[in-house]
Amino acid sequence: MSVEGTENPVRRLVDDLTGSLRGLVAVAVDAVYPPVCSGCGRMVGQHRGACPACWATLRLIERPYCEVLGVPFSHDLDAGILSADAIANPPVFDRLRSVAIHDGIARSLVHGLKYRDRTDLAVMMADWMIRASDGNVDSCDAILPVPLHAFRLWGRKFNQSAELARSIARRAEKPYLATALTRTKRTVQQVGLGAAQRQDNVRGAFTVTEAGKAAVFGKRIVLVDDVYTTGATVSAATRALKKAGAADVTVLTFARAMSGLI
Image (tube, rainbow, N blue to C red):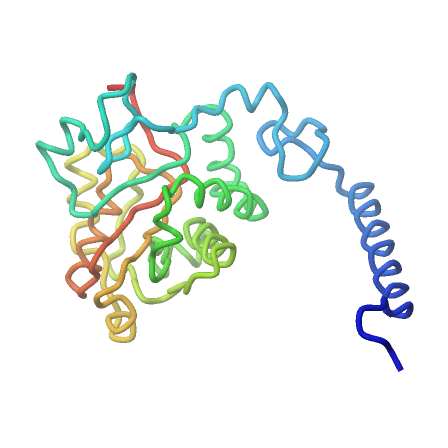
């Protein structure tokens, strides 16, 4: 019979053996799949890391920035200040947050996930996105991705935005609405299109399903995409969510395209 407050020697032995086994497995995995830089592929000290050269190219978006569009300011303009674009052209979503400028290793990570099937990068990128969300992931009711059309998904085999959203939801322990929002209009790729063409391309492209309406009505939603460029896609998706009764929509992307600071 065990005495309260004393250590169970069998349990201790099992824990020690389990720890040793995990260590051996880790060594074996590192031998077969050595840790390499997520940006350039050079050997590094641990998995999901970056070498100093690639890390130096990461342009994180830190405060001060516009509270609505998340665009970084070159100097502190006081708390709550909005960018000129946010004032002149208020977005349909409530706020935008992104990890980094779409350049250097940030661009490499996005392209690796999107075009080279590096779905293993999603977990690392999701951790950075939770940090960059400025608390909006913690306070939201649900997380969902910008969906691909069925034909595009069939050709690509996976949705990079869904990989990110699923990882964020899992890490933050939030509901993941995989099918609440659908892409019902088959659009051409946005790459190469101007701002007006992008808006026309995705106008009316998204619909909230009947089941999704109940899931988003009155809720604070985090809408996940990989890159923010002109905002046409996430704006069209947000309109569908707001039409279905979503109370608040935060757009969260890993990277954003920018020409410079304000």
